[in-house]
Image (cartoon, rainbow over all chains, first blue to last red; front, side, top):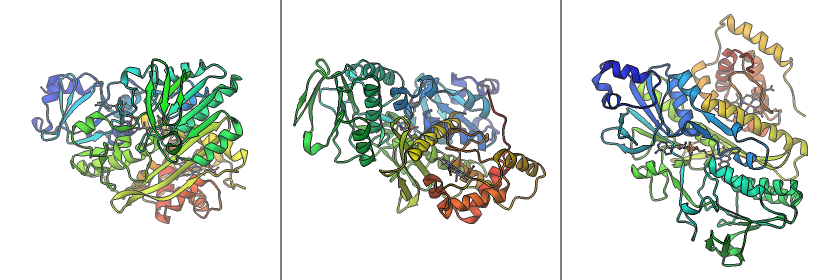
Amino acid sequence: MLMNRRRMLVGSSVFGSALALGAPVVLGQAKQRVVVIGGGPGGATAAKYIAKDSGGALDVVLVEPASQFVTCFHSNLYLGGFRSLQSITHGYDKLTANYGIRHARQMATQIDRDKKQVVLADGTRLSYDRLVVSPGIDLKYDSVPGWGQAHEETMPHAWKAGKQTEILKARLDAVPNGGLIVMIAPPNPYRCPPGPYERVSMMAHVLKSAGKKDAKIVIIDPKESFSKQGLFQQGWDTYYPGMVEWLGPKIHEGVKSVDPKTNTVETGFETYKNAALVNVIPAQMAGKIARDSGLANGSGFCAIDPETMRSTIDANIYVLGDACIAGDMPKSAFAANSQAKVAAMNVRAELTSARAFPARYANTCWSLIAPDDTVKVGGSYASKDGKIAAVETFVSKNGETQTMRKEQQGENMGWYAGITNDMFG
Amino acid sequence: MKMRPLIALPMIAMAASCLAARAEPAKGDRALGEYLAGECVACHQVTGQASGAVPPIVAWPEDQFIAVMKSYKNKDRDNQIMQTLAGRLNTSEIEALAAYFGSLALQPMKN
Ligand SMILES: Cc1cc2nc3c(=O)[nH]c(=O)nc-3n(C[C@H](O)[C@H](O)[C@H](O)COP(=O)(O)OP(=O)(O)OC[C@H]3O[C@@H](n4cnc5c(N)ncnc54)[C@H](O)[C@@H]3O)c2cc1C
């Protein structure tokens, strides 16, 4: 039993039943265990900070089926031709090698909250003292009439990075001059508020650079307004005149149906036929594991205590990132990373003698509108009136100098290198 | 106009690593600094490497670090991100950050 357990501790990523049943009580001196579900920005950061800062005192297991993570952040830069896919792909090898985190390469299929166990796809049961849940979002495949999971290759969403991003890029590059792109934008709340509009900017940049200035992008948006709207619209007028048209709900009166066979999008206002590319970004909700475990409320997302990131439903569970309800914070990788550090600190304070300090959060989201023209929005946040509330925020303004906009792209690139190191390095 | 640190950066780094080696008692609370630093290392690398427009901030003399943070807090220096983050920090928090980052060694560049 002890031998089996030891062997498991040394870097195996497949869990045998011996470990599964080896709850801490069995071995007097066994370490307390923290299980983290999801190896994205939230989960990877939490696992790293819990393992690193507890100096081996806690057993940290990261449950994530993939061996590599492709970041959604900067996937628009890949689309625009500013980055390779390889440069936005990260392995988990440093987390396992440098901090003793064990990587269980499986889906978590169930959380048995009464027994404090996570059930993995192969049936293994993994006991936990504390559980961190950061599964990101699931797409609501039934939120756009006529479109569903079966159509995600013909009408890609690319709102989860990887194969979808490559499909979108290939389709974008194939749009002919005079071709039409229709983007169906998502309703709130969704992952990365400025993301759809940065994507449109990158699409327009690719078309323009290829001399396809008669191509057009129409955005069908269910929202009355969107993040950094004035900045984006000014940028589109400046760099891509006549190429981008944004339609709010009062004008298009809703998406009536899409037909993936004929690449048609019908709205109350107009029917777009034979589009060269339709990018459907549907409505979103917390990842299935969080919803199935009763951690989400009617909104489809999970309520947390803003002082600790602990679930309001279960005191042994922390929910991070896109899956949680983070008050004034947007659903971003920066936010997930920030929340993970608050959770990690509180997990350590509960299980070890580490100190806990008042929670504080930060976020900045840069968006590339054109080469060397990057805008940003950000702020700092704290727990206030029962939610994560903005303390101070900032946003770029129209009329900023070209030098400043260019420097902000430098910040954006520097941030990417810094934060991915912080998550996966 | 932006103010740059008073001495060239590599010099600061070298001077600071000597200081750190002498293990002088820091005035800042390093544990607090380490927690607060979580906010900073989303952009600044703990290895002390510069990246894009994000400068290195490890192994500085504490006084220098404190002075620069205060100049962001007072909005004498004009980066919006740094103004917002520094604006929220009180003096003991800035000292804690100075103690923590000051204690980190500049790591040699990879590749
Ligand atoms: C186009 C686009 C651009 C963006 N740009 C930016 C940007 O510039 N800046 C920024 O800060 N953010 C950006 N974002 C947002 C950012 O990508 C997300 O907010 C971030 O990835 C959320 O992290 P997370 O940990 O909550 O979830 P995710 O990144 O979704 O990670 C969740 C992980 O959990 C795993 N998982 C899910 N369920 C299970 C299970 N049951 N068992 C085991 N593992 C599971 C998944 O495989 C996945 O790896 C962008 C997003 C998009 C789509």
